[in-house]
Amino acid sequence: MVIMGDNQNVDGMNMRRLDRIEHALTRILEGIIVLCFVGIFILIVALVILRYGFNATIIGGNELVVILFIYTSALGAAIIVGKKEHIAITWFVDKLPGTARKAVDIINFLSIAFLNTVMIIFSFHWINTTGNYLTAVLRIPQLYAQIIVPIGCGVAVLYCLYRILLIVHPREI
Image (cartoon, rainbow, N blue to C red; front, side, top):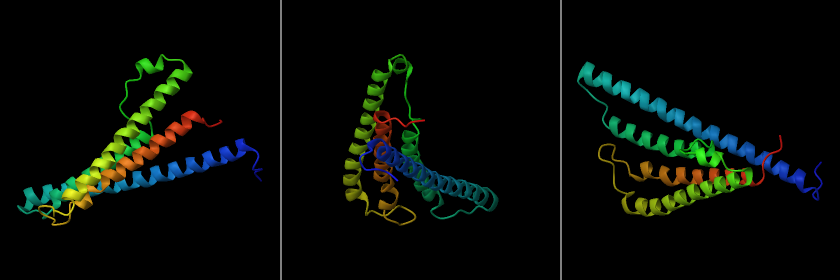
């Protein structure tokens, strides 16, 4: 039983809950990426076999491969931020004392969150402008390919905020 006056226990419970949510979100996104990659693999193998073996194709297959690749890229970029595996040159940061390193890490995640927020804002304008146009072959609205950009950026912002929270309130081991 948690006593409401005991902030450490409440904060610990909230952090564990956030950890579980972050872990579940990452697993779901990784599952979606795996499905997209399986789809890409199957489509490419089928397209190659059909083209060179039977001089035929799957209409819209190449376009679908591109859309699936966009999904894997947008979601994969978000997951990489969440796992702290994004591109970084840490040689200088690694030389800093603990408090300065934490400050640089926070600035880093704030910068990534800001960039992704800007991408979200601009992507909504982009989707509003071109989202209703149909794709060339599949004849589906481009919105279905474009919507993953603000979703992926939004998830990246959430991961950044979570990482900043972990820096400010480190977990007890």
